[in-house]
Length: 484
Ligand SMILES: Cc1cc2nc3c(=O)[nH]c(=O)nc-3n(C[C@H](O)[C@H](O)[C@H](O)COP(=O)(O)OP(=O)(O)OC[C@H]3O[C@@H](n4cnc5c(N)ncnc54)[C@H](O)[C@@H]3O)c2cc1C
Image 1 (cartoon, helix red, strand yellow):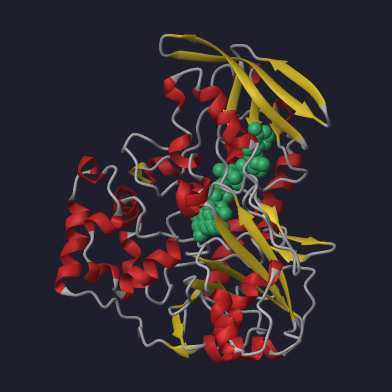
Image 2 (spheres, rainbow, N blue to C red):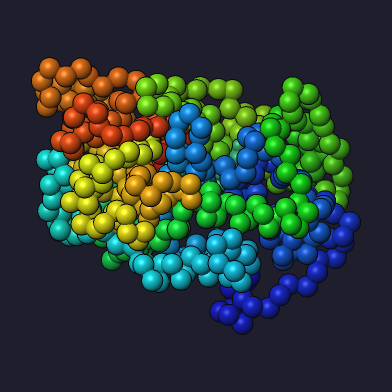
């Protein structure tokens, strides 16, 4: 869909590109980027689906958009995507992908009807003192100085902001405002992150400033994004004849580089311990996902902490390998060179009885079992030493989820801060400090008195991500020309 002249161009269908029947396409990675690339090639580029192959190192599609029930670990999600009206490519794609929930509807129809009938908004965005209202009262709390900071940042040139940190250009008054609390927890920004990135996000989401305090700017899927977004697209691509090669790691790509022209000539991969390659010619198109957000993430469980996996990391290693061949392929280590600074933790909590849902209901002021919006986006515990946020999306979040369970996603901005244990000990004298995977529960315990009971009625799934661009790797201070 092309928008350059309003809807005059938007609904005209492209003509079939010359020579497309002679071409084949190869994608590295079966995340949303590759799968939507394949779908656009079929729909708009009018390429036959059986000319398209997707290589994926994992044994299932979807990349970061996961959601799975692990037999021994329970329900696992890496996040609940915050979506909004202006995801231009996403909605353009999903208007053409059939829903697997509603006969005759597209995924976009299904999503639109759901969010129209049950709009997202929060009734309690920030808490303190174990679930008490922190009385940010949906206000930004911006002083004159803080307001001027925002305007100055907004109007600054990109050059002025490159390699600068947020705390380097914004005042203490701004950094202490409700606005910054809402923003940093919603978009996972640290104070030392890139002022340029913050500026670009401000431009990108300016239309949503009004909906920021109560998160009414956001929209969510019915189930986790694997079931609501990945599966319908995957099924449609299979129906079109697209081939998925799972458990296959692409290790290198050869190029014929002449001046500005770079022709991929060979893909190398490893699959089930065997090396393979594919020769590419003028009629082969190659699309590579480089530097995945969730690469090398490790999973713990209720008793075992997830480990930080420092590599090898195929998505980043492939980028490093090809970037060594030509400077035009970018600088991966701007984003992945400092694992300790950019690592990130989250966990999925499943409640096993009614006690925790009652506390959830007190905070979010909605029935978590209603099937409708629950917390309406994240709830942030302002006095958490991790600056912890948690969210309960519409339940059930998984189709297989029993009716009496709630799946909660938890993440924290300062996951390296120790002291959580001390606070738990202090709060609950005589109790042993939380250990292993239940470390995340330690922080929850501090903020929810009920969790200090001996049998908390919870199951925790702990997850650590390696270099994590969303939590750091994309946000570190950078030159304006350096993008992943
Ligand atoms: C916790 C979290 C919260 C997020 N929140 C939001 C949000 O609120 N809103 C939003 O819009 N976005 C959000 N995102 C970002 C969004 O999920 C991603 O931008 C998007 O899913 C990325 O899709 P992708 O296909 O580009 O990459 P990925 O989903 O990372 O897929 C890349 C795939 O390629 C595979 N791969 C990589 N290298 C190789 C190789 N060499 N060989 C074979 N396979 C390879 C990987 O295994 C992976 O499956 C969030 C992400 C996370 C992790």
